[in-house]
Length: 134
Image (cartoon, rainbow, N blue to C red; front, side):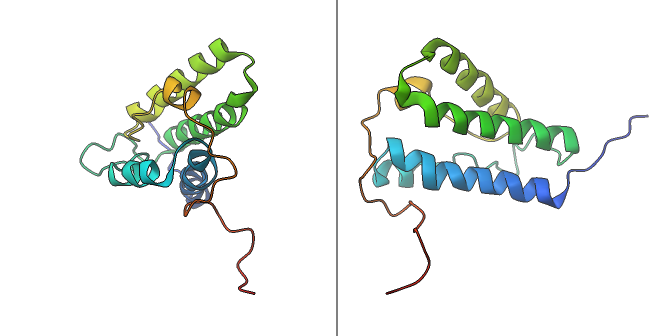
């Protein structure tokens, strides 16, 4: 018999927050809005119930959180141009981990590396600086 500990609501919420961070902070730095809409339509980082490998246990939730955090860190540092080989290895390892758990992530390291910088561009996906209308 094996005892499995269920993931907490906080972990589930954190996974959702990290996916949201990728869509609202990271992707707008690399892709125009039409590409991000296409990613949403493809259900990138949204596991389907039919092929969901994630069983909502503590270990799996930790693996998914760690992989999402690693991707975010790599992509935030990508334009510095240092340690490209190490970043590529880390990126590929974590995207494979996400795909193994059913979190569909079809993007490659070169798509981010070769992407035209979108910083400073207006995007519907960027979080507003505040929520007040003036």
